[in-house]
Length: 82
Image (cartoon, rainbow, N blue to C red; front, top):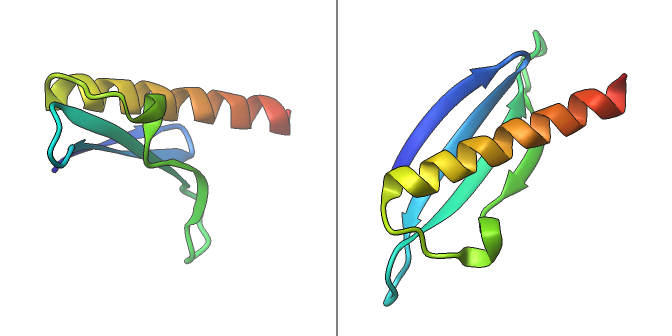
């Protein structure tokens, strides 16, 4: 398993690249958490099987896809609140 964290405005994106069992590649996963001052952080978005479970060749590719998906979820969330 490989992980990356990225802060985007009031959100933190947790990206993961998970090796697929008995198959080639890595699955991309993402969790987006709202970072406000409340002690309990709120999950804004989660997808543990991005791109339908597509097997990315490297962990870096899967992480890049997951981070971009998290950023897109943040942009959609901000647009819905405005």
